[in-house]
Length: 509
Image 1 (spheres, rainbow, N blue to C red):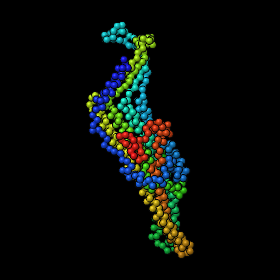
Image 2 (cartoon, rainbow, N blue to C red; image 1 turned 45 degrees about the vertical axis):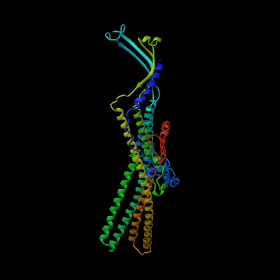
Image 3 (cartoon, one colour; image 1 turned 90 degrees about the vertical axis):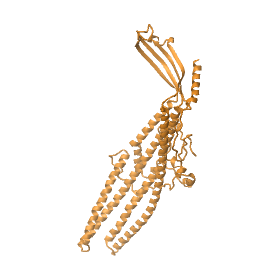
Image 4 (cartoon, one colour; image 1 turned 30 degrees about the vertical axis):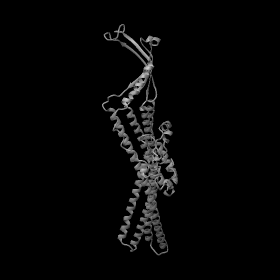
């Protein structure tokens, strides 16, 4: 009879859906829509030929520069960085939330043991001989419950938690890419400063030689004190430039030390020569699958997924909750009889909770979750627009730097040729050494410019690698931490263009 009654109550709950299913949700719908690849100009048809020649960015892309010192610095940063460990801790927290949401979908079983010494009132509903007496009582039983998720509330909560966990995994990868790129860019800045210091030292030596020559000419009556004072003014200027560069090197070393977790250590005291660092081939076009390559875009997509499932969960709050509950055990007054067969008790049956009047609480909750979804969508849109701009900027800079380097090499060749001519004329007795030093000034200026342009080229290559995703592979952090179940359970509902179908959770093709 109890089972028949339980079945009847479940059926009544399902019939109640006809009432609560008509609860007013009208007027509460998302207002934002996701930007897809074609709307951003990332047409596969337009860039397909360029994509054929592209090589995906390797996970350890920094090794392509061929600098072992850089490899060691990045490895140390990835191992010790607090920012990376913070992102990993957030991932672990999101994974724990997923496990908690998963537990809510399964039956629950609890043990209970209560032992009580109690005086029963003599003037209440308790009959003699209990009335006015002091007795021991005990209960030992198992309690079971299982929420029948007819309307998908618990499943939606689990899916939302999975989306948040996958977003945290992508955030951890984005932190890894950002850290590696910052180390590389800071190290290349240190390389640039080291090269500039060498040029500045030669400039100082050249100014000293010029001053000595002018002093000799003044002593011989060939120059005046005007030329002497002008030459003397060049020495403090050269020393100032050298001191400024050395200060910048110290600050850059401090920044690099902080990135690798050694803020007070002597880092990279002997950086590699700039011409020993290999240039990395980079694409000249924006790839059509850009949105699928970047960890920050993946994180934004997963937050849209999580928010959409929160909306589903909010809608299920309008429907009944149906639980199956059961208990079995012993209960008695007097502990000596607790385990007697007559002390047995058990029960089983459904429990129905039906929202009837909540003063607008459910609508307010749904409206809030819908607003969160709109915010997540617009955050995603902002991220993809910024990603496309970032890549476009780096591609434009890379192409411009290549043209600038070609012009600078031509100017440097001309300056060095003039210097060689001045030197040959001096050696042949047709000119003085002051002309040689003057010609060398142009050569040193071009060398400084060459160092800056080469440094900008390396920096732009790293920036473009980061903009293209930095070797991000979806799911790699979760797999590394033994969380493959989470990633698999929340299989990515996005296409290569990074778009997501809000209604179905499927890829937009």
